[in-house]
Length: 129
Image 1: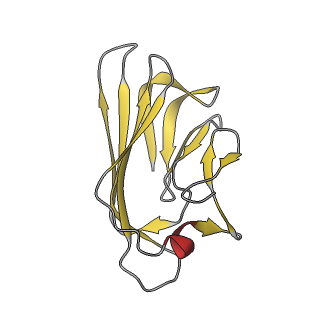
Image 2 (image 1 turned 30 degrees about the vertical axis):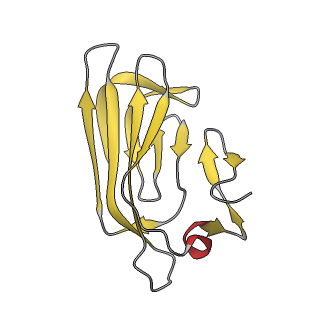
């Protein structure tokens, strides 16, 4: 989904006035600034967004609600989380809601290693060392 913001926002050093909200939990702007919290294929559930605040102090809140993992395994795991992007200082916050992750190996492992992408394809471990 593409969201036209009506103002410019910086993600990972790239300014843009629209956001792309992907089903894998990642968010980017039209200039390739990228943030991804989970980087797992998610499906079903609901993606939504809201914009609060005033000029110079907007907060874009992206919500992933009751999203299932599309990993091909038959299990009922799901996640709920919000990503808040702040216009004023380009900070990003993630808020976890109630979730069920009973099979983290199959939910999170990509090419044999758990991953979480923050910014310019920099990889940090998620869940496991």
